[in-house]
Amino acid sequence: MKQYDFSVVIPCYNSEKTIGSVVKELEETLAQMGRSYEIVLVADGCRDNTFGVISQLAREKKNIVAINLAKNSGQYPALMAGFKYASGDLVARCEDDGQTDVTAYPKMIEKLEKEGLDVVSVVYESREQPSLFRSLGTRIAVAMSRAMINKPAGIGFSITFVARRFVIEKMIEYDQPYPFIEGLVFRTTQNVGNIRSV
Image (spheres, rainbow, N blue to C red):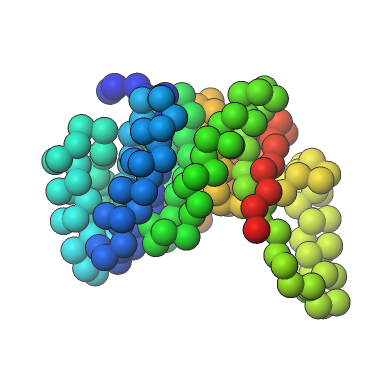
């Protein structure tokens, strides 16, 4: 298997109309980074022609991989399936509907390499003032995360992240259904940083 500098894994569900533009935007951003890259597309038991679309993309370009899951497994199991095919020294995750700000990848990689981190995750800052009930819920969730998965204080985690290869390799050792991605990350490393986005 060819090894790339950077892999992006995209779980796809009924995204035949959006995945082409997502891949195009990704390619435009990644081409400017001056690194070899691959895009791993995982069709998660789709009911539309998503697999047909990503198969065509894979036929057209050698650095695109198309995977078809026999049944719908859910976003995180599909992500883990994609991680098994990713060969990059660094591996990232992206949404299939254009909601991921792919222009953040260069900043994430720069922070990871400059600060010697193992994982960098985007933390999204809401402009809305949270309600008292929501604030209390957030505090409880943070306390539980610190107690259960040894999450460092002051570190946020979202599903938009870039990780070093060894982190991904440790994560895919988990072979049970319903993976808890954040827990698998912090079980592997505490060396995690954030960039912030609105």
